[in-house]
Image (spheres, rainbow, N blue to C red):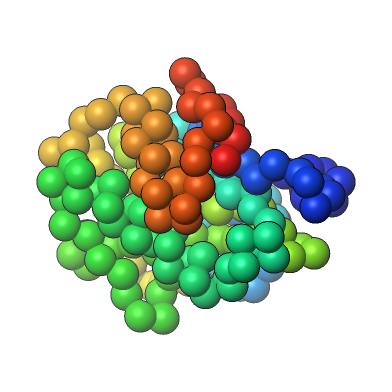
Length: 197
């Protein structure tokens, strides 16, 4: 995504990449190491997104948004709001009531976080994106202060009674992001990989 962003031209297609990561803790550009409590043998990687520390693993949907904000005439705050609303709309479609918290980007169900955001903007174009907990082992979140918030608990679709396969969640999320950001999906992957917007 860094290479794609660096090589973009005014005509480059905006893209949405859907994937899973192996178990890893990632530290954003502003991350403080004191938020890593007991990482154990899970790898820790410094990345160039915004935000603090989070955890990724199979069973969590990652969506990277490679967008030209200038072409969309879209500011980063509005983009974050649109992404959060797309996730909320997705969860509503699964009969889950979710909300945002002022000053704490992401999406929450009750007091627990279900989706995290971490973006980077370079030359007016975004990369990185969001993670949505679908059906994963949440225990490693207890080894960190998720997103820099001590005591913050996490949840996932599987614990809230929603059991669509991860691939279906990716397809559904693609539609909600496209609707919220006013894109037409050029193609929808058959597996969690990438879609062009």
